[in-house]
Length: 66
Image (cartoon, rainbow, N blue to C red; front, top):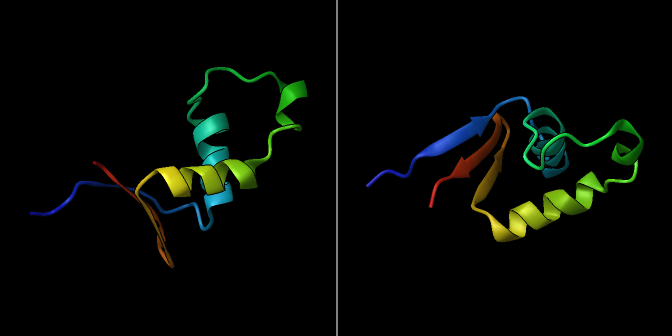
């Protein structure tokens, strides 16, 4: 059985994916500009990788649905 996968072709690292999810997709709602500079996107990307189901490839990042 194949797993469903959402592909993020523009993201080459988990840090880029974290930025996309938080800022572009608004996963946590609207984050004010003054607060954005304090977000550790690399750390959040590591968290996503550890707790999610992601595969980083040369073609982008694939998020497998559980």
